[in-house]
Amino acid sequence: MPRRFTPKVVTANALLEGDVVYLTARDAWSRKLSEAEILTDEAHAQLRLVEASRRQDEVVGVYLADMDAGPDGPEPVHFREEFRRTGPSNYAHGKQADL
Image 1 (cartoon, rainbow, N blue to C red):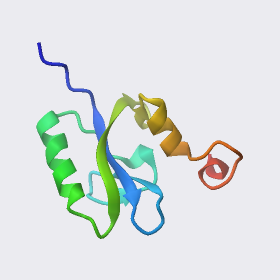
Image 2 (cartoon, helix red, strand yellow; image 1 turned 180 degrees about the vertical axis):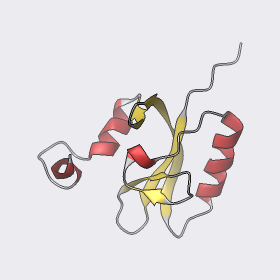
Image 3 (cartoon, rainbow, N blue to C red; image 1 turned 30 degrees about the vertical axis):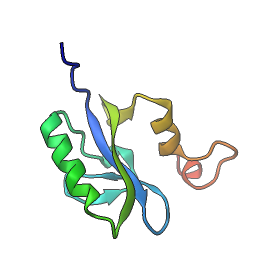
Image 4 (cartoon, rainbow, N blue to C red; image 1 turned 90 degrees about the horizontal axis):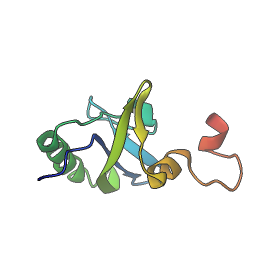
């Protein structure tokens, strides 16, 4: 039996700054996970991944990340994505200062 498709977002790193970015429904890159387009259809998710992968002048390392649909937008289901969203944990700077 095939596995059930889990919701995903397209994520990558901004080419110049290296920041984690997420693809929005308006086809823009955002540094806020809450603004990411949550993809619930596997075929649409693959299409968005291919489209985002072509934007090599903007981002690197494009991939689909598993998410849960939360009340304030997508929420990570894996520690890696939570870590990427909040940044390094050694002290409050950058993204942690904004939380």
